[in-house]
Image 1 (cartoon, rainbow, N blue to C red):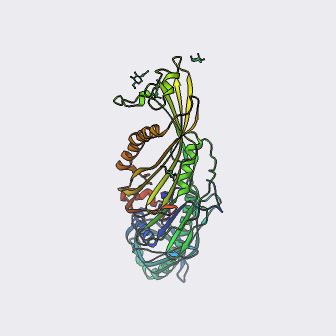
Image 2: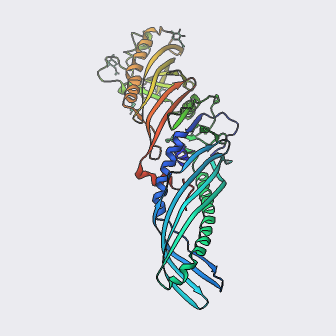
Image 3: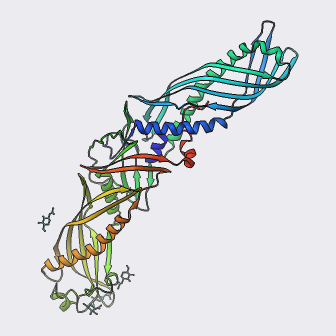
Length: 485
Ligand SMILES: *[C@@H]1O[C@H](CO)[C@@H](O)[C@H](O)[C@H]1NC(C)=O
Ligand SMILES: *[C@@H]1O[C@H](CO)[C@@H](O)[C@H](O)[C@H]1NC(C)=O
Ligand SMILES: *[C@@H]1O[C@H](CO)[C@@H](O)[C@H](O)[C@H]1NC(C)=O
Ligand SMILES: *[C@@H]1O[C@H](CO)[C@@H](O)[C@H](O)[C@H]1NC(C)=O
């Protein structure tokens, strides 16, 4: 389950002491699901496991019989569902009891100069294994896992020898059994521990920073060690987007938020305003929030053209100063567009500006005027079929003249036109996209089932069940389950 979670969150830079901007809680329901996947995977693994040769010697009173059991393979197994629980303040406690396995192989004995051999059947019954693993974090913000405690007991083993002069040794089978039971028993915990070490290595190699697109990188190292409570596992992650180019921190900080527990779902995720706004800052600081608009981008059917003639009714002096010239508008964000989350609504403030130019016949641009365009968008988002959907509305729109090379003019009529332009172009396109839905990242074969998205004060929460597609489980659970006999 741990691997699932980390794969999901794909956790470079450590950030102890900062407020986490992304939080995740794995509930008991999620843990049980993970454990169930682990059990399925273990059942499959057991059939293909390589069992080391067992060798030893048994003192039969008149000397020592040296034996080797080799070519051992699994001929049957019965794996009960393991129990897994959160172990408060530590990590996870897992147990499996009543595990049985039968094996077959070849035996070879040497007693003095007498060598013999044949086949055998071995059954090991009622194996109980309990293990406690501790969860923590390493210096670079990865989850770490270590074996805290392990205990293995085999209540019974039975062995039958076939072939050779096996009847000679059959009477000493009890001795063999006891010795082999002890041998197998003492091998279980080192195997568990080795497996935990492998898993820890695997976790330490996982990315905690990754490229989202050509402009942004997302950093999600842990900001604190995992918090293990009796009812769940909480992870605090940095959750900051950076511009690939500048990699600078925004001039605002992540605020504290409490992600509510939702025991009805396997996983809860909380995404703060900071995460979204750091992305916004990343785009802004990289100079990506700007565009040039010219007449060829205005729909052919529009009677309003982007030229000084069309602007005549709005700015009477313009066509007199620059008769019938095409214009160019440079539209950009004056400052970082900020998102805020309140109960059930998303608000975005966009401090925009427009620089208007006349395009001279020699193609040089003559500056005309600068406008400040401040808009506030409000809307809602929801999650549906692993897509983010929503609807945004233009809530407030103000246009003011910031400076002018062509003298002052009234902006009321211009405001109406620009507002309409925003509504029919930018907003219409955005809403078309939001209606169609924006696919959530594929999250390594882990699918969200019945996700519930809620916009809360300062953050968005998503509570969801998970489904790991069975064909994809192999890769996920590789290295996840600590018991490999
Ligand atoms: C208008 O912009 C487009 C795209 O940026 C460009 O290809 C075109 O040449 C521009 N037209 C004028 C008249 O500047
Ligand atoms: C400017 O727009 C007017 C319509 O308002 C159009 O008749 C005229 O041809 C345009 N001029 C240029 C240079 O595109
Ligand atoms: C282009 O034309 C304008 C206006 O006629 C003039 O002021 C400017 O110097 C010219 N620029 C170039 C590069 O020729
Ligand atoms: C919304 O627009 C009105 C003018 O229409 C303005 O007075 C008001 O301050 C604006 N509200 C915000 C929050 O910017």
